[in-house]
Image (tube, rainbow over all chains, first blue to last red; front, side):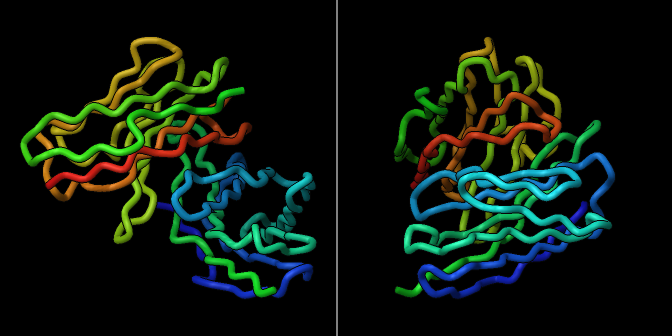
Length: 111
Length: 115
């Protein structure tokens, strides 16, 4: 099975940028990279996804390495509400179109 | 948009009983996924459907687990008989695509406790 590697935990100060890294070295050329976050007692929430180019939306930015073996989720100004577990998950397309979640990164935001 | 709706939110049952979890995907979404989450194993993909047809059920742990999608607006996950180790939060998610071009939208989950 393809795997992702993320730091177990990270800390940030409120209103500072946060860069959450993810390694997905076994990703194939057709696999999208998805990021989700999960607050306590809630289901995972979609954050952003991309294929090759960097992506921006109202929640975050996604920077994808040129070789696509890693990506970085960027929260431009962390707020207390951004404290959550963040999952990076390549979407293995083709005959195995599924999202497999790893352990994720627990982000703490300090006021 | 009501989002993905799961019921019940909480289910407590005794070992050996049948449990049925329900999911209503977002209207227009043609892919549906069932996940299970525990502290020990994290989020595990159990099965997913595309256009009501099961595509991959290799994550279903045992024959005691079965899932159906009789139409585009409803899916069930059944456990019969249930065991204490089935205690977990079960999530349903839907998407416009099963191949990654569209995001997954998750429900709030069903917390199952088997005593």
